[in-house]
Image (cartoon, rainbow, N blue to C red; front, side, top):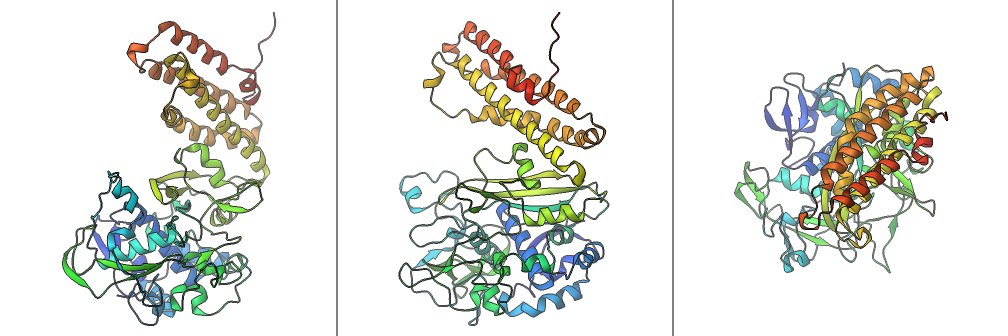
Length: 523
């Protein structure tokens, strides 16, 4: 199977029809393709990155004008097929001159069943300890070529720590990815073509990402087209941004894997449930694959500077993707550059009237253990440069005070529940989650009001309204949670004391100063 020519990408059309397509069909006009339709959300996250990577590799626009032309008037499927054809040989699934995302050599190792390509498949210790509660061992023994390919690509994109010499992905285990997509209310069609093309950068910006754009060999882009640049301790090499073409960021291959495409059977795929004549069941793997080190900055991920001033990709955290992270994903701060594609888009679209959204997704990983997959969308607001600094400052105040109020509720609820709250064990982070969920709609309403208020100088009104939201939510949630502790340990007086403390915290000096609350006049 060839991933350019043959249908393998699961999609949903405007009519609701579900089918597999080849990537060049992306711009078909009759019954447009509006969404990916893989059997797992992490597969959809990988597939949109495949499409973006393919377009960026084969059709990097010369400038923003060329980019805008294709955004408004997409190429025909025939034109797109012609563009993709220049690299068609790099997308064979099983070929002696290079197989997509697989080691160039025949690996000498035992077989592993195909289901272990899935990031959330249980490891040996999990199985031994009988902790494989959510995904049992031995599942997904037979996958169709489409699901096997997507599983492989998803693993290479998100590869977590996997034991000695099993390398993590170019962005570390389970990186956070942010994709610009049209809003449903936008005049721009909300189809899969726009969801992909909106995240393409022009030639000059792409070339500036690593300083190694002079690397011209096919294998500098697609590492599976030559012998693997292995990373053994004594004889191997690290792979830095200067060693390969910048486009390899879209095609990183940290794991040495070889799928056994020849040993196949017919039947139903255990992931998508489709019939196939060539189900695959096993693969070989070997450690010490490509070890990506150095100052990589993938265009689709937000980053952070650590204490050593090293640039590190952001990852999803156990607290999820609530609005408290909105500012860091959509705006560049001194310590947290947002994704290159997002920053560029905001510069281009500053005066656009259409509404866009930011699709953020990624795994929350605990070393090699996948704890959760997070997937959400945020409004993407373009702000004029004249008020950008003030806007960022005010939004930071909104999220900082929300964090403070969530902490107030959590601590006072614990004081209502326990006579010695400092000694109480157990995770009560769900109280924080409930606070942010309860105030999310109000936060985005505040954002909409903030821009015009900044322009006419009445922005403190937004802060005052935000305080009213926080105050009401804090008291309501306290009343809800305080009565749901251990009934046998309930103490009405303790609850009343804790609630009074919360009311004082709501009007504490720090809160009044942060939200610019009017001071009471002395009589």
